[in-house]
Image 1 (cartoon, rainbow, N blue to C red):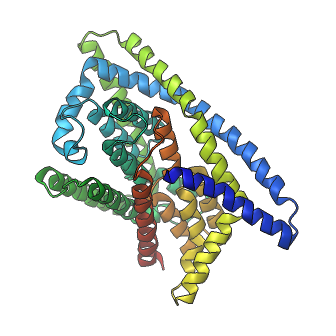
Image 2 (cartoon, one colour):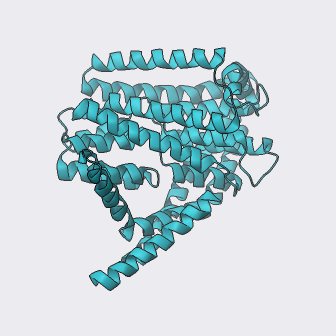
Image 3 (cartoon, rainbow, N blue to C red):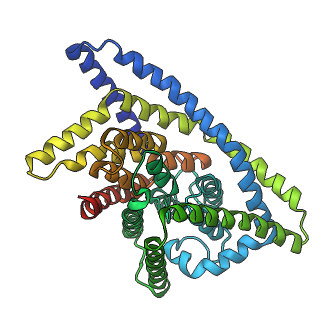
Length: 410
């Protein structure tokens, strides 16, 4: 129901603001612009789905090889001690745990093209365990919130944008983004755990947290001792080597188990095509809603209102310039990228607001896009508290990004 209210709110608020612009500002073009945005965003939704078709076919085909060869089952058994604590409703050793791990790994490496198909594969398997096919299950909600929190190790795309905009040190936002996205994920997991009464104080989880902290510490240490040129080169190289190694591993495992690797791939690829078609209506719905909300000027009013209230409280308002990127991030990844780039263009990539816009962009992921695509792929209409927990993770990421940006750059 939350998604329903938010989607309705996009249109109603956009209509009211557009009507006020016509009456009080004489803006006779606003409704034309809004309608044009609906056509453009509908086309974009279809193009995104069409673009996903090939990628989905590829990765679901690879995953089918891993499934038929038994590799996914083996991975699931290995990860059960930890993931079963986060997903207690999933049977121990179930193959979906392997799919969840593969998705999380791709996300952390910044491999969006691989992460989405792997995530949709995991959602399909979670739906098979779901007793209420139209309602999000507890494991689905935890999985979605981990995705929307956007935990990423190296934000390559943001650093590339900064380099293109002429930043003196394109990688100076790396550590702030790393800390912010970690906080976003941690808060999101805690929020879901409280809602689902999951006990996180246990040996496997504490060991995992210790390993993650050590890994991040080592990564930060390496980052501080490597030039920015080498950082971008090696991080991209390592990510792609790991990705291609996964493909080779799945194929070799299939050969060792003497399965028909090619037929397994084709079987999985067919699922990719049907999944891409299934998500089109959900993408159209939300991208159109987001487009009319932004085109009407509602986003500008919202940001301006927040800045005014903060100013009345006597708090520094320098961060307000980064709020459009922060708020758009939950709605649209491409929209947030556009606002981030525009902020750097107008104020400079090395300005306080320019840097902060990059940090808030990397603090978490596009919550509503992920919810629409993932839930839409399996026909979930009742999302329960998935939106609420996802937005809590989003909000914590934004707050963390703002505070950490003040600490690093102000």
